[in-house]
Length: 89
Image 1 (cartoon, helix red, strand yellow):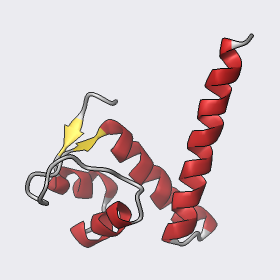
Image 2: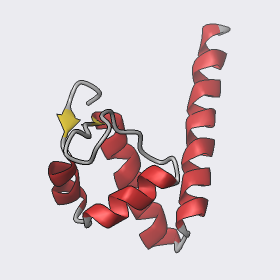
Image 3: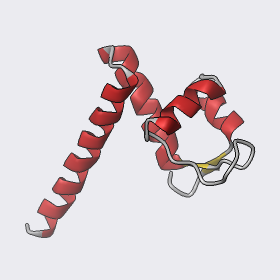
Image 4: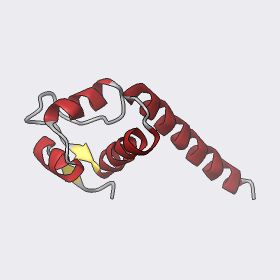
């Protein structure tokens, strides 16, 4: 999934959100596009997955954006710790 890059319009389409919502996700640090302007932004497959997960957290658990961002950070930390643990097994 990481090798896939999407423009802003494609990300909006795949996540069924408006560009303003994507901007809020960027400001919250949930997704990190490359490029300087919205027309140049490119989102990775990981960004797409994070965006979809954050939207599910908001919908299913009624989390606000900051809560979704924190949950994603904790999920990432758990994933990283599990990878490190596997190195010692």
